[in-house]
Length: 417
Image 1 (cartoon, one colour):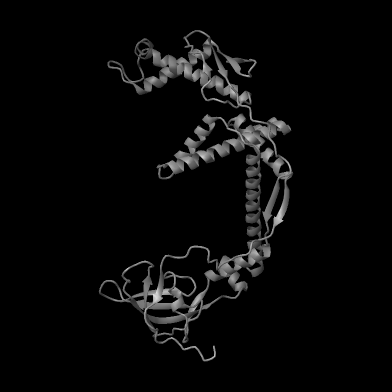
Image 2 (image 1 turned 135 degrees about the vertical axis):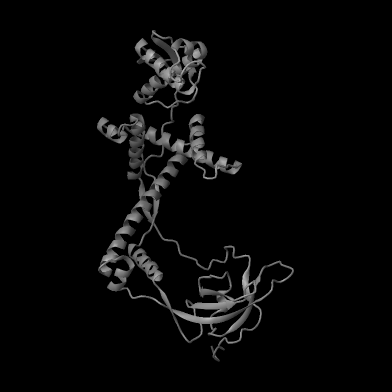
């Protein structure tokens, strides 16, 4: 098989495809074998239908299948060998059907898409969030340590962080139900933890769920404190290292955590820098990509939806994402071309690993183009934002627990406090 390309004044490419008679006959044999697998003709065993009968009954189908296979084979070679982006999925095709024992020649005219010359490639400003590795290490250790906290019974009033076992009536007749509440974690819902500090074993109190706007108040529930337990946090010593992760010492545990934290930070930092760089490129290079490329990618994304359902909102989001990804691809591709980023055949073949060389070229080229953009970016370290855990501007819960009666058993505050 072979092809010849001519270019007209508008830049359109007319390709003259040629397949010799031997290749055409091979395809006729393949198509007949495929058809024989799927059809049944009375009087003949499956797979043993004479060629004359197949031609009589399925001649037009065979011709169209052979033409499609021939074009697919030859166009695959064309696009592997030519670095083209089409502007339309439907090129101008002059239909010519193949014939057995004859060479197959036909023409196709393609209109190519030219990505605009990229701008804003160098000097992108990237403010990278600050990172304190020591702080992250201590936070990781604290999180692990909290997993091994135990709670021991105490004869005193409950305090912040204590575990309080409460008992309350079951909805059905029978034994009362119990709940273990760690003060500060809101295990029972908003407001409940505020009722527990100062209560000792045996104390009783009533509370109800308060829903704003409700005309009739929900019934109150009577609770009894069964037990108060205080947290026992393990020491950060070699015994803890063995229990927590099978390490011989705390030094080993710290070193492993530091390595994990460093690797995770590098990956997150790289992802952040790439995202900012791509956002900047998309803002600086606005154009409409080929619609068929966006359509194809949007269909692929839609197929990945787990529930298989779509709404106008999800379809809109999917299409916006597909358009963004296509533009990213085209911009990076054009940067690599304009900047003349070198790639050896050895690199491309290694990346292809027996697959499509053109796809491997796209992947490598776009990776190198993004690396060029990032390497020339101006990076600064952004000051960490102050944390506001008590931000009252954020919407709160629509309900909360409130005390119904004064809570007997709660220790009185000392005078002067």
